Image (cartoon, rainbow, N blue to C red; front, top):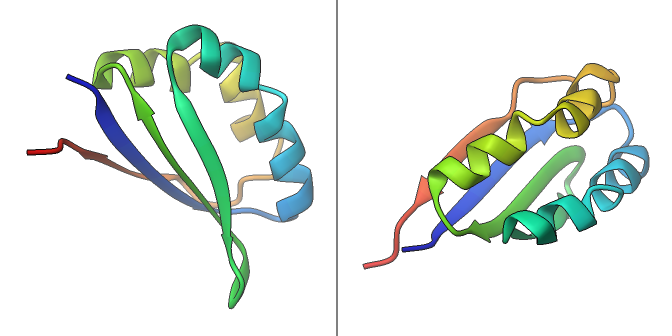
Length: 89
């Protein structure tokens, strides 16, 4: 059963963060993850990602990968991400 993932985090520069997010598209596709990035127009330094993954385990494996972790470590993400996993019933 696939899951839906909603992630929010503060970023120092949304456009820079978005370019790094887009740079991982091939890795997301290879993992079976479909995700899109969003920005709150009233809070432009808050990023949101809404997507689906084959399982929570697949998502966690991708999210903790060195390439994804490099974005976290680059300083463009300025808060710990808030991650919510949802199952459809």
